[in-house]
Image 1 (cartoon, one colour):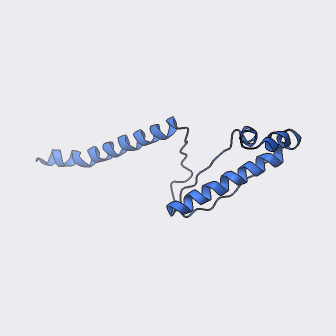
Image 2 (tube, rainbow, N blue to C red):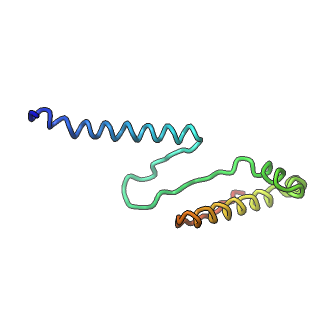
Length: 108
């Protein structure tokens, strides 16, 4: 190998790394998962943001009472569905050995 060939190796490695990252991001985006870079500095763990898009439909499909209460108090049902989803996620995480903190943001 010549000196010129050796100089090209780091650039090739970076190019391959970027190509792999782009492929992974495309796969996640196809599944409806968005990746945002919040900060380039620091060592904070990654944060997942989940937005429940159809909590009233979920309540109706899982409980006949949920559908009725959703018409009377949609905010209450939305919070209840969010709590149930959070509980199910925590159970799944614990089973897999994933340490996580889940919080529910309620906007008014």
